[in-house]
Image (cartoon, rainbow, N blue to C red; front, side, top):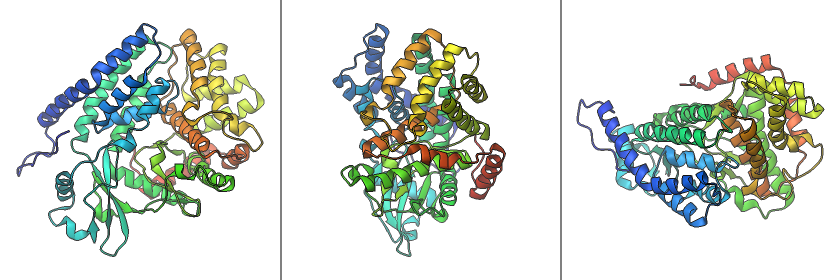
Length: 460
């Protein structure tokens, strides 16, 4: 993608004409890079050839890897949803975020000048020219403050709003075609949810508020650390925060079980405690969004994809757990209806319960265990998802409530982390500690107070 052109005085920051031109350019980029590969894959699926070859998967990854922005972000999301794409595709697409090429120094200088003014360099003690990390929507540079504190400076790539507009329109077309080819799941709510979350990720002021929210939640939990935001060095497209030192989570796979379990317990708390107590989840389970400290506590590093749930949805999660505990189909049906499922037959409830029992399985089993015995991280949930999808083709279409997109994605991602670590824990006790004395009215008050304190703006 080209870098931002200089703007003359008085020129609107992002006129509709300019944005339309950028969208057209984006259509061409995505179409040229992905169109032929996607067409071959769609044709194969259309004629029942479900086998994806490694070469096609690599070609798709190479095409997407050169396209910064939401199309790459969506590919990463899809890679974490079981049975959304063949295993070969998922394995390749999951590498996109760590392989993203950074923008060069000319872009960095221009973006920093636009956000902080012409004297921006004097506001830092040091600023590294080479990016420390690059992802789908932005890249991170190491820096120091004037007081010598280590900083992480996150810059958004140029023209991301235009890329979102273009990529979401193309994604809508893809979903429309998918609904005609496969009527098991109506994807309209999924599309709406992806669009809303992607647009939120462009707002670094919102991300800063999310970061403060999590800092407040875990202020008294030494296992979990959240960066401090430097508001005087941050804008809507620039986020400066403290640099947290840690090692990649996967580098701990060979450590002693006790140490791996300590990391896994911290990860469990970082995900389930905000959800059960405040109706909030960290919705991006990519391994690069965490690092591990020397004391086996964890750093949470990215807060662009935070999902805030209505308290009633959280209550439904707890209620479904209780229904599965007692094998109560009527209670499960009430939970599904509370979430927004419609026209629930007994057969459909039974199919939904297959997936629910898979997600809840470790929490229903009161013993020390792996999250899924004998399953590799990349295969977690695929067998179950395949069986559920097959039955939904016969019973569907079913329209999953939009909240499920990131709820399921994050749950699968968390389970994969536990598998990578080889953790063995009593997930039943850990989970029940988070929902002990659950009260939806208290959650509602607690959530409102927490969001207000952190300055989290309402959803767009």
